[in-house]
Image (cartoon, rainbow, N blue to C red; front, top):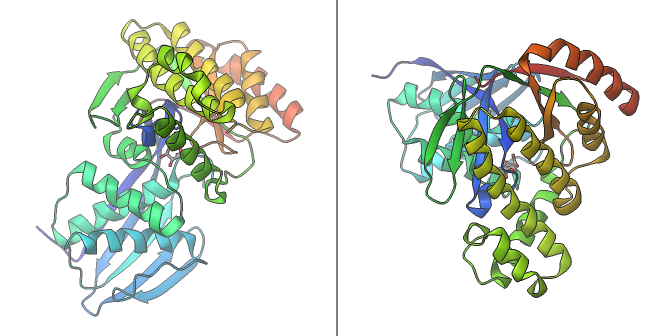
Length: 358
Ligand code: GLA
């Protein structure tokens, strides 16, 4: 059934463990957060495209006949990218008005851009009554990032958003594309803290990391870094330049940590699970070099606070947010100590929220 007006909504996502593994066909544990992106749409029949971003108080007026990227309009580009992706798949639309309202903190590493592209697709599907499976929807979102934002990201963000499940972490396998929901114990919560520096994925650091991973796979003669284990990588260390080896070590180590984390979750071993988050952060800092001092300081402040189980940067890195696994019964104690220490170290109050998988 179609209608002239419809709403699409999508949650933000958190990468819990498995950093930069998605485009290396690896494993990720992710979850949805409570905040959402809402897109309200209205059909038109004159091929016009009218977009309004409520929070930014910005408008875009164009036509479905010209979906070329607009460098000055980051948010509108994501929608143009979705429309182009649908057009490429033979979906024909007649014109539309979209109003976007975001309840997600921008640039905090919750992937507001994927939430926008998924919410837009959900809204358009309701308006025109077409269906697409989650993997194809994720690809439309990814293409928008690649072609309209210039970030060669993997499929993690839209896949996590499309499969997010309350009280569960989603285990995503980017080789088989299998998705498994794992119950998340009641005894822990996540604290998300913003380091106050906007992440700069678009600045090329992200794409450069991806290139190093591809170079590692090429030099190791494997199709992707998923095809090699930690021991094998260690044995072949000599065939890689040091920098490329360290990039590969991070990625291969992350998939290994996700495997171990899934076992910890099954056994309700939150201490073991937390240690893997701390290890992930150390590897980001030393091997992948996608942490920055502000993120390191947040993780260090966490480690010295009561109730800390583990902490790491979440998402691409180079800014954004850290994720802290905290004993639920000590949430208040943790926050008091952590926020005071972090404020002292960073020199400003820390924007944060407490969440469980949503
Ligand atoms: C960003 C990208 C994802 C993923 C993460 C790092 O969020 O959009 O595809 O690569 O970084 O794990």
